[in-house]
Amino acid sequence: MPELGKYAVAVLSSYGVTLALLAGLVGLTFWRAGRVKAALREIEARQGKGSDG
Image 1 (cartoon, helix red, strand yellow):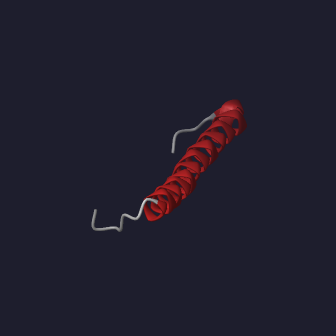
Image 2: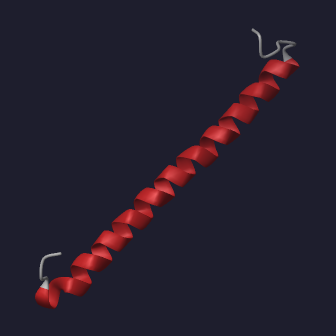
């Protein structure tokens, strides 16, 4: 790891915030995908269509 000197706190906290935001976006994407899949399953069930099309 390179010597960051007086900028160590700023650089490392920036990396931490960036990783947290990326993890949040990935989590939000998976959560939303689950909601959309459930909604589509519900719509297909109401229309009388099964998972086999």
